[in-house]
Amino acid sequence: MNIKYFAVATALLATPAIADDVSYSVGDDALTGYWAAAENPQGLVLIVHDWDGLTDYERKRADMLAEMGYDAFALDMFGDDTPTETVDHRRAATGALYQDRTRMRALLQAGVAQARERSEAEAMVVIGYCFGGAVALEMARSDMTAQARGYATFHGGLSTPEGQSWDGDEPPLLVMHGGADTSITLQDVTGLASELEEAGNTYTIEVYSNAPHAFTVFGSDRYNARADAASWAAFTAFLADRTSE
Image (spheres, rainbow, N blue to C red):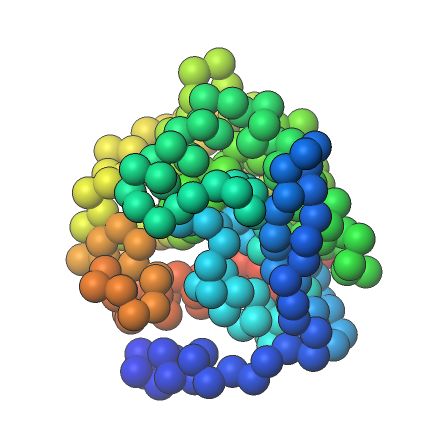
């Protein structure tokens, strides 16, 4: 695949037939998600954002998926009143959820409900970026796991919190990681692989050489076009497989 062509082609995708922000709530907290609909959906993708909240990046990925024939809903894990402008803000927002897994799962379930309300597609796959990858794995380990047919992470958090474990019955997992990631190391990758192997999970881990953390973020100084193209191809193959059953 010509990497430059891939980057240009994805950037020029047309707007989906239906695409708009969605207001919803969890308790007293107002949230804003993003819905992109395919004309004849082959499946449904739930997108969990990075630590800077739901941005145009997740909207773009949702639009790309809709153009490929999949309904997509990018959920909100923070809420409208949570600041994300600074690193300290982001650490506080993610830290609060890492310390409150019940809240994390409630926000996930609310996002699932919003996606299901809008899509007629039966098969759902959950994906997450960075912080969102850790959240996707949280859902995979939870009692919500069977609501999706697969879970995928892009440069996501991989550690299993104390008190949790893998039981081997979770749907297939796809982990896409940058070999040059210094935030989530190759030791973290092998640690997760050991846990999954011991539990008997079905999983695939791809490591992209010289790709740093957040290697898929368009326009950033960490963007790696080769790793972005390879990971997106791996994910779309995984998505097609998981939604065709």
